[in-house]
Amino acid sequence: MNYININNENLKELIKDDILLLDIRTKEEYEEKNIPNSINIQLNDLLYNIDEIEEYKNKKIVVYCRSGHRSITACNLLSMEGFTNLYNLEKGIINYKL
Image (cartoon, rainbow, N blue to C red; front, side):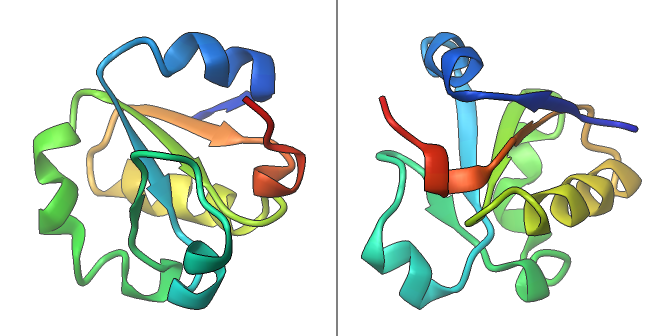
């Protein structure tokens, strides 16, 4: 496993750092509800748009989706592309409260 699973409490701490919040849901899901200051690149487009987040290759990236399953796939893809500080928001935005 090349990422760390985190919960809401961990996220509250991480948000204080210079991190990238990456929402990999569809555009429609993102527009419905999202975490402030996150960027949206849906999972199917992630590898095609990886250059958009290249500057974060060695910074902390919190990946989230609706329930925490697609974000695991995204973490694995990013890891294969050389990203090193990956965090998966367990249970996704369903349980998100800040």
